Length: 182
Image 1: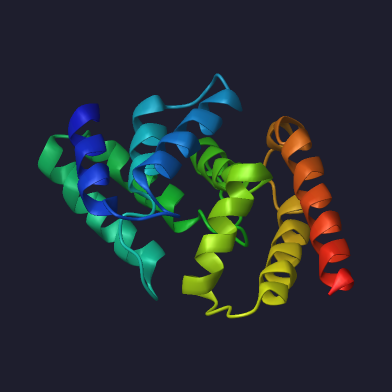
Image 2 (image 1 turned 135 degrees about the vertical axis):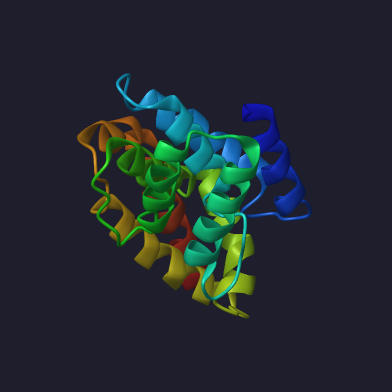
């Protein structure tokens, strides 16, 4: 069942740079590092299916499509709603209640910090925010990092991402200094 879920994720994210299969794999990897006491079936499915549909209603559309995929793969019916709830509470502003939801939420933030996170964010800024100036990327990433630092659902995630936060702040410091040189 895991390989089928992952194949769906690969197929539905092919050609993406920011919300790629690699991103989904890292989110799952980070989520597992934050706790030992979670339902791995729910966490795995939520991490690999949380961003399979992009667009204005991506969270809702991804949750809906995830429920369809899980129903088709023989995933335990009693756990499908838990996956949907985790996906529906995966944005930085959300306050997930389940442990799996918190793990997904925080792992997404972790993968948006540090060197890979900055790269993803820079590429995404052109698509998400229609940024067409380099200083807009700085402004958007600064706002993101400032919010991210305060948005973790779990203390373990905040501790785990300490070096990524420091690196992101260092990137912003250098970015600002270089912008000022112009």
